[in-house]
Amino acid sequence: MRTFGWSELWFIVEAAKWTVALSAIAFIGGALVGLIVALSRTSDNRLARGVATFFTQIFQGTPLLLQLFLVFFGAPILGFEINPWVAAAAALILNSGAFLGEIWRGCIQAVPRGQWEAADALSLSYYWRMRAVVLPQAMKIAVAPTVGYLVQIIKGTSLAAIIGFTEVTRAGQIINNATFQPMLVFGVVGAVYFILCWPLSLWAGRLEKRQAKALAR
Image 1 (cartoon, rainbow, N blue to C red):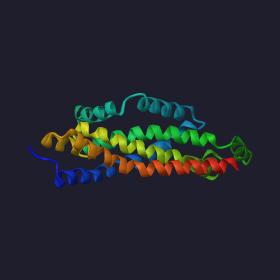
Image 2 (cartoon, rainbow, N blue to C red):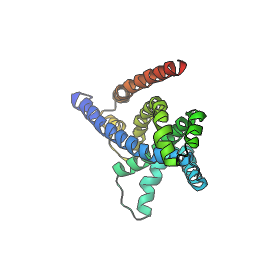
Image 3 (cartoon, helix red, strand yellow):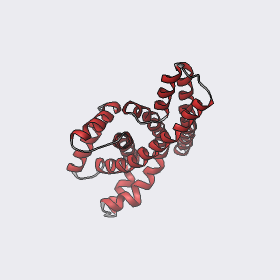
Image 4 (cartoon, rainbow, N blue to C red):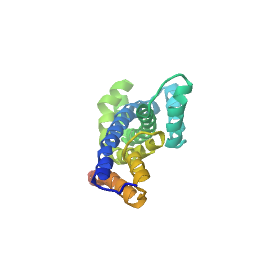
């Protein structure tokens, strides 16, 4: 049986790069999906609103772990070979897209109605109403909750360990199986997550305070 040493510590720390990479992919992909969802949810098209609402309810109403299982084990049944990296990225993108879409829908709808009515008075199309009037204001509102949700994405990547993706949690499992020192090993794993998430939580808090001050003026 091995003892926990510098090489084991470095193995866990090095695995953090895969946690960061998976989080970045999930956030960028989820942002693209979320923007489509948010725009569909606030559009005048009933079909687009219905499809976006159904998508959101499916991915918000089921656990992320179940979504990971469905993508990882479901793809081979449908004839697609898929590795843990692709499965984890796909599930996290879809899940993040549903939540970011709802966050941004709320931000779009938080833009004062007077701005919407002014755009209507100018006979702007839906595209130009969003691009020139609504989205620039909604983006300012969305910064703080979006940064806050990024913390949730980073923590959510830990579930990818279940399907064999070697990120921080999976690295901790491997080291624990060799050293049988769970308190020490998973304490280090928790510290790595804290180091990744804490600065973002502080940043989100400061953005919220700055936004509250701006709205109070």
